[in-house]
Length: 43
Image (cartoon, rainbow, N blue to C red; front, side, top):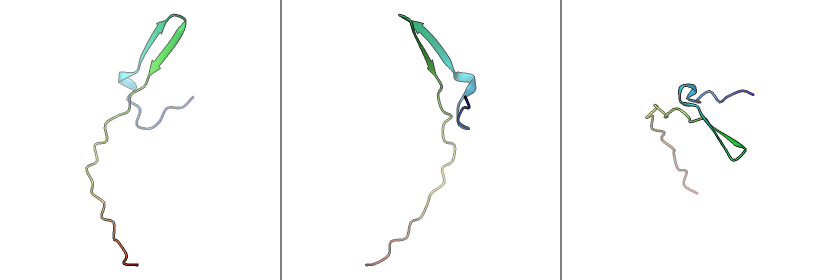
């Protein structure tokens, strides 16, 4: 199994309760604050 590139591998947790294993893999915060300009064409 491969993890996404934005997986926060230092914050992975696992819990076992009532026979169920839950693994939580949080994602890293998006550090890009880039704005995107979208032009609107007149129809």
